[in-house]
Image (cartoon, rainbow, N blue to C red; front, side, top):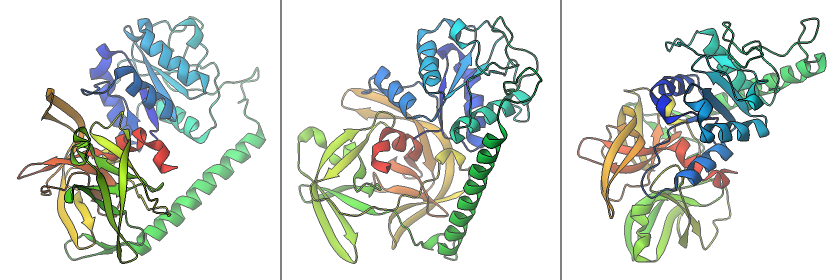
Length: 390
């Protein structure tokens, strides 16, 4: 499930990209790229991303106020009280959205200390914590145009005091304290479980992702990784579904080799080429799936392709949000939002998880050359198969 879905007009793509990247640096997972690759249905892919996002950020501009796509996406966000709107231009909003808290990023120069951007982050966090309220903002005047203050302002009563009661404030404080305590405990557990070798690789963790071999007609074609629900994420080109061959999943559990026939249950809407395999013989347990959003990685940071404790190919992050053209049955297809790393992968490595230095999954191997490996970012995979992580 993605934190933020950004709704915008295609003409504003170059202005929206810095906003999306800045939100990622703030720690949010973001879906914003309308480049749906070949084989996907445009409206279905966007609808699924919109439905699974926790927050909808709509970018109002001279182009978007006339876009039915944007207005429909904004209405969907407003309907579930998950809408955080912003101004890219000084425009008059559609009538139904004029009483919404709106921040102004008119003329924004990518300064993350800007009050408008700070207000945007504040609004998103409020939605994620479930404390947002659909109310009129000082950022929008009665004509639906932005004020100069830029930041989101809470709705106020006649005396100028916030409408939030003291009880709501106490509840919000308890929630924040609980999150902080939970995060500290999780961090401590992670610290205690990490053991690194001399070259910086993770030697052992208490909760490892469980990888599996994808076997077609007795030959290992690729790899996959178990989800918490007991299904397996794999690459479609390794499964080879077009030839209707039988698929078998083989993995290690409790020191024993286990195997099960499997079928393709679902294809990804947002991560082209990834499929969800459902096993005929259920494994009967939940598997660890520690995830780190790939967009929070930094170039040069260590990563490793993970197949087993004894087989970890090291490398470093080379590029985020990369693109690659592949040649499919219907001709060249451009795949975007890729994680590009320097570790070397070989035949059959497709679908294997890529881990950061703490053992969190950041991507699934898509393809490789002699000098680099390209992976599908894990947040796109999770957004496509959110039901497998419940």
